[in-house]
Length: 390
Image 1 (tube, rainbow, N blue to C red):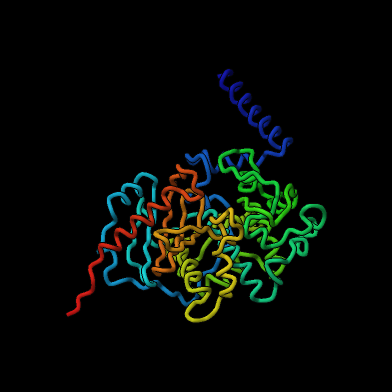
Image 2 (tube, rainbow, N blue to C red):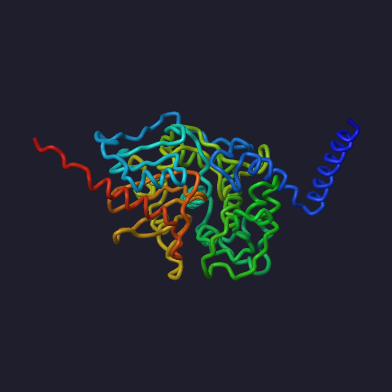
């Protein structure tokens, strides 16, 4: 039994040494990363990881506004190609909302209409909407207001002229490694570190802001910190009061924080369901109006879904941009293939939530699965029988 005792002592000593080394080199966040991610059988963040982090609540509406259900909902079955893709990459929710009514709705892997899952970077669109709301309320002057008005640490050097619009449009010029699978990248650290504010305040500028597009999650986190200073409340409460409640969300949502009662991980990590996420698609489809009332300024909405830079037509202010069959498309997008896709010309919203995506194989900034959802949804819609005239 002595050998077993020595083995246990040696194992404990090894673990302590590893923890000390992690602490000395300031990579102790990796302990949390391993515990949450790898010990749950994943190699990156996953749909239900919000259960392993503290969260702030985005409170639901006291007067829920359920989506209308089309009379012929689910009469047209998903195409074979679509069902095969759902199975291959682990779709958990798929909705087609046509003319403000749910026309098709499917759930998989024991998920239901009420099931929550992590939206990842779809949250960036919601943070950008919050920027628009703060401008509309006069709490922020404009997209051109400087970041240093709210965070004085960015007042010197190359970041002195960095604006809130630069952050929203991914043109900050900040030093940030957008790598979701490298355990030593700043993106990974931001996800698991328990002092996100200090991490963001330590980021430096390396390029002139406002000159070109480069997708960086740190931009949205810094933007959220500015918005919170401007509005004087937590971003979760601001989103609840400005959008979640007015749009009649049926369920509370959870927004991951860096620690208990800490700041939200604003660049990602709102956990909700497909129906409630779709409300932001509807809001932007309706030019910022909800039930006839302007929640967002229509000019801001239009600017958000228009490219800022000609050589980066895939992004506006917090929203991804594309086209399909010569029709304008804008959409919310998150890690592993979370989407709220809007085709304004056809009054169409497509929502997909799931475990994986299919990365682009042709150099496009849009993932391969994104186009499949559009192509197959339109095939389904084309099968719809014309209304009976009798």
